Image 1 (tube, rainbow, N blue to C red):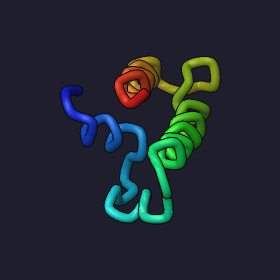
Image 2: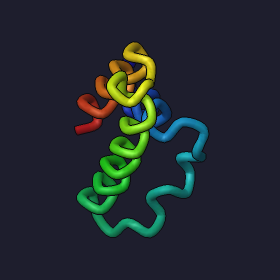
Image 3: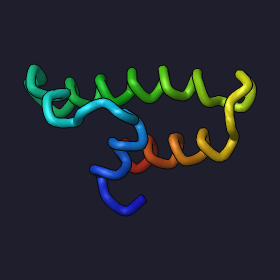
Image 4: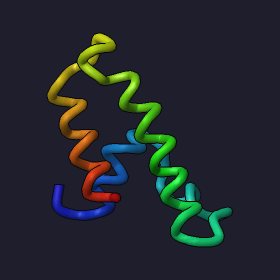
Length: 67
């Protein structure tokens, strides 16, 4: 992943990125949304929870780039 848009697309999946941050007043508010979405996605694809390790690594890498 080389761009922030690609990383956000990995974290948010099929959600439209266009209107996600409209109600945010600052960067911290936006990061809270990214972090919550990451943790929800991580619970679904974590290898200990029956998910795919490769998908989890990709998701985790995308979150590290965003943070």
